[in-house]
Length: 286
Image (tube, rainbow, N blue to C red):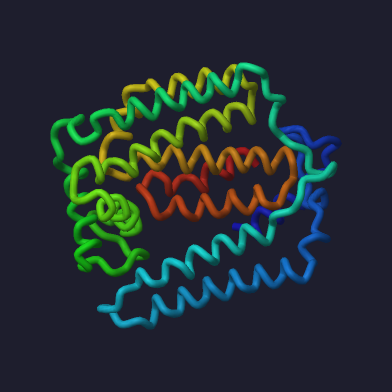
């Protein structure tokens, strides 16, 4: 995919500006800073951590607990992102619109409302715990009981097991309750409001972004799925974040934004099946 994208960028003519939607050329990206020894070392460390994780996944016996590989997997992602971080300068302008005076308090109010609608009486509304939600709850208990030992595999109905590891953090801390099962996904739903706001603000303007955030915060369909102990609600968060960094990368030409697009598109494969379309969404704006 990287080779194909690079070939496509090289075929495009040079653009005259850096505005969103301008023609993109591979020659516009500064590569000199990546030649610094410490950045090369960090990328090599990230590659080594990835290779080490993959090697152990293939060679550990089936009964081994592969959850111990999660730190290596996470560190490879973090190291890769760190290699592309650079201090902002005149060549990398801030792609955000100027902040208006009443924007921050209004945004905080919208986020607080969205959080309240997703957390209030979480253990009793919805009243029932059944179907997919209950099945994923049982898978979460299997993680805590040591029956599921591979976070990189798939579990119930092909759902990536890392979802159940995520839920197990809250169930282990709060006990095997309905509220504990639902809490992580309610927080994911609330975070989507902020992601949608940033996306629309990047593309249009602050008033439209605030209106979008308010509509999503009170959207009954999104509230309902945010209050279930099920991973479907992660799809809009991952898609919104990936689009945010994609459009920021197209506008500001920052390598870290491109890196985050790839990271989020890869992480999307570990959640609900709908999020596997995120990499396809990334291709359309180009």
